[in-house]
Length: 529
Image (cartoon, rainbow, N blue to C red; front, top):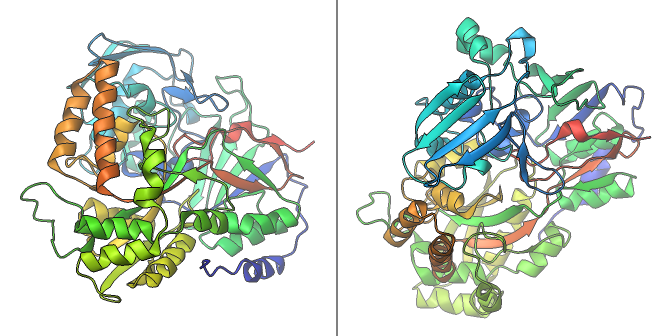
């Protein structure tokens, strides 16, 4: 059965606002209609998807090449690990000015920016990673050394545009404090911060002589925050926005009105349905045996009830590939090609088998009840449609569902506090190194608590101590194989990030997708000719 989605109704609403683009200020202002994010200038308190709001004006030490995905120089010209991978040395770029006259970028700004990640209120995605740093040592104005407690091989990722360590001015902090930073944070990007209208927009102004020599084509950039999908479509069609984050179900309607899709360079987002309450560490008070999917048979049944092929076609317009283990691509450490061969037998759509497994687990038709939480974020517009489809699939095998559309911040708070045993939730997450994904998602001392047990903790800790490639591969595969065998969650799809743009305003846009915020590198948006 297909999800009950009504794109034609939404398009009709959108068309009431008109379809004539406003082109007079095309070279002056670019407007991106976003599904929204947790609004704050305090990057150390915001998760990676919401770093979209910082990408134009707060830079990182390392760049992510938009074409190749390689890590390339940015504020750091070079970087190198010690033989034991406990120290990472960065040679910093000279002659980089901060916005608003706060002087030149130096190693002291790196120390300051890292110190913000150490603040008690820091909840950024990689805050736990940055807390593993024992010392950030200033060698001179343009050389800094990060010394870690344990070996780390993922530092280039964490310090890159894909991570979340944004470099900000110590001079501004010393002069204006947190209040001044909140009002007008000084970065080094090709755009500078111009202001916010909370709940409505965030604006940026072009830096005409940026240190990189790259000048954005558009003098002003605005992110408009619009939760409603139909309204984002309407803004795009009316010309009030030039680029929009739209669910794939609405993209075809925009294409019919002459719009164009731009995709990230890589298939970098995965969607998985996570199961609350998977806290199998001995003695964990958050574990509740009455949570139905603590039973492995229920978890397998919930997987086999989902028609992935239909879901991919109806909600994602067929643009994606299956995920076999959450977070793993063929280039990831620990990839096992056997997962693909065995996937259909273990996870494939089979309602009859799903019913039988539920019966074996002691659940008669209609007896198992659960809540599905849905939300939208930048690049994550399809959550409510997936939740609706899950409700239909689960009803077909005798599972009763209740769908609740909530804010992402609420869902995040629930799973981080282990207060989500009531619920399951679909979530789109960007690729990161598999070691970092396990730290965030499955290590019991990590932030997200998706599926935890002693085997994962023990193997993960051994993995973090290893620097030999063959040993790291073995340990990574052991964890991923375990997650596969245990039906730790409901893996769905990998796909590229996509946005829809007005081709009369936007001529081209190259972005990798793996940078924090997904739709990034706005300085590379080319105007239509």
